[in-house]
Length: 309
Image (tube, rainbow, N blue to C red; front, side, top):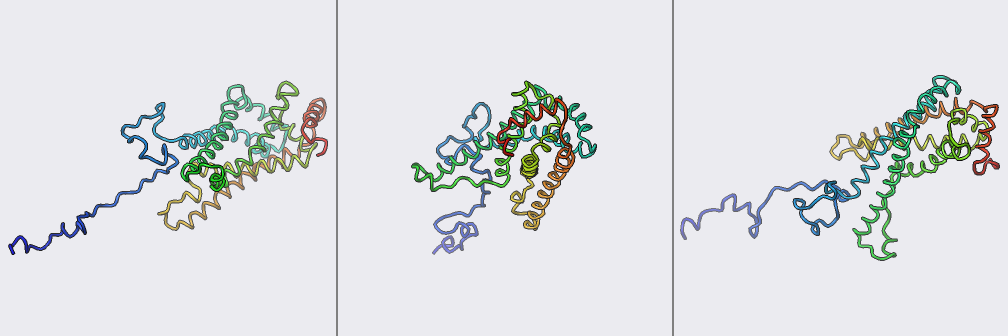
């Protein structure tokens, strides 16, 4: 036996393991969610280095863009909502007078209810926000069906729809409430009287006095659902919701609990201020007399179920 044959194995030989397998450093797991990729089967698509983007929009999937439409459309609508809450709740709460608050409403209305700004701040963002959320839900549903290979109607019935978050549920509940509010204050007056220039806080006060039950119930539901949806939605955009706490966060459970209480506290404070001005001041303003009051009566009497409420 030669000296070379009796030489002990080196450290490199020992690390090579059984059958020549070499130990390598672990690589990090890709953190990009599957829903933000082009598909679930990357092997069937060309490499990323040779893949061409569609219309110059990059290599993201539909979920990526739908999520961003939903996010950024809420920015524009928040501008309108801030003006609207200030005019209909905060200013009445400060002035303690409906007629005095109407002056501020008439001064600021042209800035967010003009022919140009109303579609940009209200109509288009609202339509984009709702439609992108619905489209995103259907797209994720389709992804689930493709992932599990559901080909028949029976297979599809066994696969559940994506979980509906509390924020999304509040948003869906807000659609009919906000829709009825828009119809009674913007669409119906324009349809019956040609415009809605006479619609003011006095019109809302008149409705509270004329139809107290439906007015108080509807306004409370609108404010409550809206405040919680706004607060939790913005917390989500800012990555501050409890589920968004990092797995490596120290005292993670405590941080999640604090965030839950903080977001709900902000929601309650917003709803409380909104209701204090809306119900406490505007809701107690009473009926409007004269020909304007008769115009208000005509509008409210034209609403569905008005004779039974």
